[in-house]
Amino acid sequence: MNIKAQVAGAFFIGATFMAAPTVAQTFTVDTAAISAACSASAAACQAVVAAQVARLRAAGLTPAAINAQLGVIAGTATTAAASLPPAQRVQLAATIRSVASASTNPAQVQALQTLASDLEAGSDVDLAAVASSLSGS
Image (cartoon, rainbow, N blue to C red; front, side, top):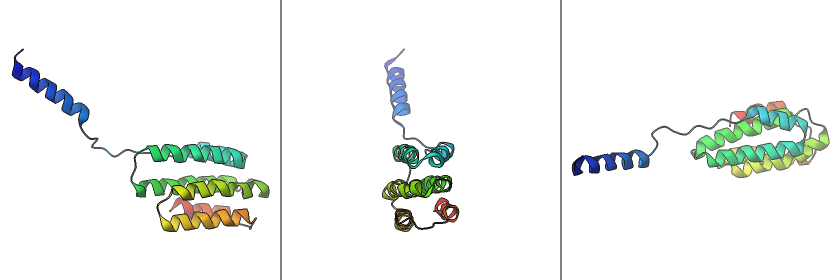
């Protein structure tokens, strides 16, 4: 093998491994895990939501894509938590606040903070309606 072929081969191999990805990364929220945990207890919900938010942050998505997925996470958690007793729903506020803190969308942050405050106050919140609006955030 001649030197030109070796140099060209080394260059090709290096360029292949160092090339930037051309396809955007995707992220799929594990809505089944969130639904199961959030319909069981506020503590289980908080653990699963925290894990999903951590996965989301590590996925390398754009802020807009992250915010959209945060809406899915919050909406799924809120829908599932509708079956929890009132005391558990109050505890859900911490989970909703953690999702809000991960968002860069001011309107989404405000909606989530309002929901968390309402839950903490023990307000009668129509969680199904709220979940529907959050999933579209």
